[in-house]
Length: 171
Image (cartoon, rainbow, N blue to C red):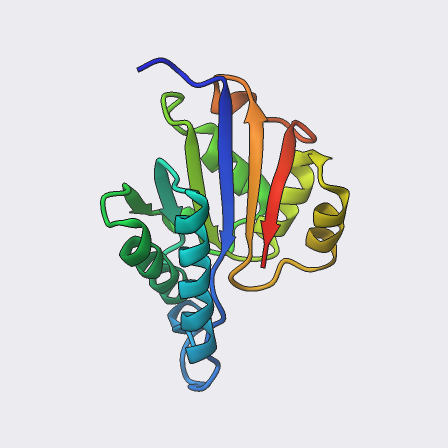
């Protein structure tokens, strides 16, 4: 398989989590009902738009794994996915290291994680694209939001600040 000339990076913030049980640690908070519904809607949107990553890398927090589970149910469980401890509350710099370490034969990747890291990474990487979408993303990257970035080149390591185009911001 040849390396694609364009990489697609999906940055997906977990769906809304529950604060119902105050004894749970942040890491253990599950999705609330509204979050489960939003995750299903986003997964349906991705299926309809054929936004299917080659691999999904997910934070180990309960809410991100539940969001991932909804994606797998809708998009098909055959998308390779892995849980990566370093994604839990990772900074933009840590997330970018994750992206740089990808296999260059992959054309697309999805990170399922947390703010502020995802929002900061999306803003750091994007320069072009729809200005209104970038403005909305800058003002708020809500739960169950998805940023779709395209990055020219054959190597993930070549992705640099302002080197990507924001193709869509869906929330």
